[in-house]
Amino acid sequence: MLHDLTVRVAEALAGAADGSDVGQHIGRELIRHSMTDPRMLTASLNILRSRLLRDLRIDGPGPVSVLATILENMVVGFVGALTDHVRDAAEANARDERAAWREYQQLAQDRARHDLHHDPTTGLPNRALLQSYLDTVLAAKPTSRIAVCRIVLDRPGVGAHMPAISDHDLRIAATRLRAIATEHDYFVAHLGDEQFVLVNENTAGPDDGIKAAEIALRTLAQPPAEHRWPQYRVCIGIAEQAINAATAASLLRAARTAAHWARTDRDDSCWALFDASRFDRLAHRQHLVDKLRATATDCIDVLYEPILRVHDSAIVGTSASPVWHHPDGTTIAGHTILSLADEAGIRPAIDMMVLRMAYTQAARWYDTGALRFVTVDLSSAQMRNPGLVPSVAALLDTPGLPPAAVHLTIDDEALRAPDDGCSTTLEQLHRLGVVLAANIVGTGHATLTDTPVQTVNLDPTLIRCLTQDAGHYRSATTRTAWLIDMLHDLDFTITAPGVTTLAQYETLHDLGCDQARGSYLARPVPATGIDRLLHR
Image (cartoon, rainbow, N blue to C red):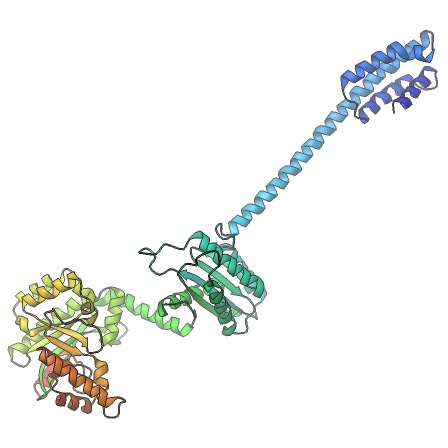
């Protein structure tokens, strides 16, 4: 390159080329070949000025003038080319920086988008991405079927003696579920906490949803070799249905409901399939619970079931129970209203309401000598109510029945393992003079020793077996006879509830049972019905 440039200068000095053009060309060529240091240019100019003409053996004023022009234009070309080079380099750097920034922004956006739609602990798609996925599938396959499995890792005793499921355990579960999804072409997501979702978007019926749930159950139950698998159960709710009748929200809601059924129906790892009819029944029941909670004080009345003395069939008392007149005109009584009241959290209030109304009504019958007592059931929750004893004491202070004519039947749950509070309540009620009765004796685990209980109600399942054509009649009769004899030896008065046939009543008479009640003898009726029975 330098040789060629020297030849061009020599040609210009000889008059064969324009000196100004040659000088600018040489300056630009230096820049083009990355000779951009101005100090290099200065040194080159000094060498050319002092030695070029002498080395070429050129004399005279003309060549000197031409060389000066060449060198001057060489500077001009160098500076111009250097300016362009610096500008181009700056623009290239700017382009590179902009490209690098755009790449960084794209990576940041991709990462943010990934973090927005994936769980940070397990790396699985989260609820938002699951929702988007379901919306896409439902829109793309309107004639297909789909199954959504909601998986809940349920640790027994959380908050008491067992720690919550750790992030490490969640990651193990996520890895296993991801493997299932890859192998079977499912979609898996982590909803947060201990809940996951598996989606099979190509089902032919509920069996395919059940298959996915059972695969997940087997896989999650296997302990890894390097880690002690925690003791928890896996509960899976399955929602499987036609896509044209589903939405993402309805599928997830149905799967959540089925998962709740799986957790409450059994104590081990299991699955439950969403059943619309069961859901409707539960929804109707919840409606009743809410309505009862709102209207209990205005719509509760009392029914009275006669209690007969077995040896002469005389009516000696009544068992009072609540009846609810629903605003739609229906009537709900018996165990149904009691279970609804338990769910509504108002059972103690209803117990006291029934006790007050029954106390007032029974006082009228007692004054005429028609009845000796009235009995009212108390729930185990009521036995733990600190206001129970003061309320009963205040009721007994009003004119009406003597304390011994008030029989309070204690739920067997409160007698299985009575705590200090329950035992204290029993003693205080006994000191008030009321008669305490134990419910469902004979098949349960009620503890009667060291309690002030005086009367017992036999378990109705014993009474149902006291029929000639019932299986195990002989053994049931023998067992009931032994139980009655033992209770009599302990000075208990025995009542047999749930008598539905003459044969049962006659057997109880032969076995020496003291009292009985049931649909064969008389059904629960309002107070006016008892009046008619007493005056027949």
